[in-house]
Length: 388
Ligand code: SER
Image 1 (cartoon, rainbow, N blue to C red):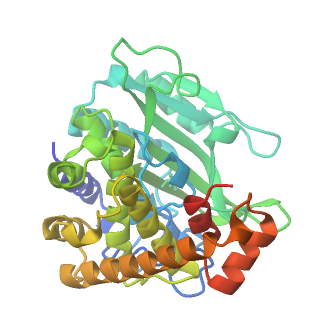
Image 2 (cartoon, rainbow, N blue to C red):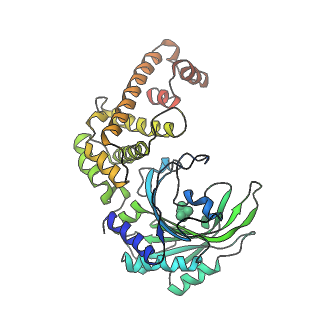
Image 3 (cartoon, rainbow, N blue to C red):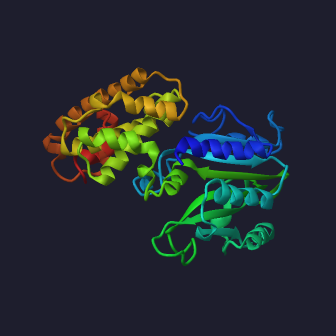
């Protein structure tokens, strides 16, 4: 099943069960939201999880693009991407958690053809504030799926305050042997789908109060599921990355970890630009700037002659289409090239300044402040040019 078929199967399955599809899925949260980028499918739905009626009703389904910078260090492993798509379904005070899990189980096994013996789930075991999630536990026991009970791992929140609740996570076995052990003890169990029983709100003082309605919020990482269903060992090997794997290696010889970083960050940069962000020194623009600069640093490491001027237009078009963005690929390329030029000028200035005798010894914190404040040389760049 390719990624487009997967999206269709998911959305139609929930539409057949009374869910309405949300349109629009920009990475930019609404004005007033303190978070820079949309981090999960539920993020734009926060007011509706808190009780405001949603214009499309109480059952929703969506494909939401998300950006997570907290996972930046994990980029390049087999399951994490900076920008990814999340399939999601919601019950806004309508059906309960066990119904959601039952539909989820049906879709994974009948819809996607996953062997039920390769599934394991985790369920909230209860703590001093909230009791164990017996509804989920009973549902899984009925279906014969093995359950592991945890506490912290099965509590989901999008931040220190706001809607939160116990969750039940569904894992798929990816090992070459028959399934063994449990999700928290063996990372060959890969999480594919999270169902959150979003019934609580955490207040500023840390206390929990019930939300006005009992919601269910589910999220499923699209590229991760695609790679699993396509029998690939990493997200970078699923069909979404096919053009990247075909077009980049002949252009730039890179080892596998570097190729993954370049694919991930360039693709993310294209999507961020496609949503209207431009490089800058603050906020969203700074995240974009960091993504582009990291690509350039990797490319220049072995050959300073490599640059984004050679980037095939097909990759820009493919990415903008995949994320249903209408930005012109030529405009995106110009933004990337302008940023590259700016970075090149900064590198040149950095090399000149750092060649001064004053900086020949080890760099101190004061040196780094001076280089930043007086010469506009960011710390990361200085450390790339001259590690301490
Ligand atoms: N909010 C949960 C998550 O992001 C489920 O959608 O994993």
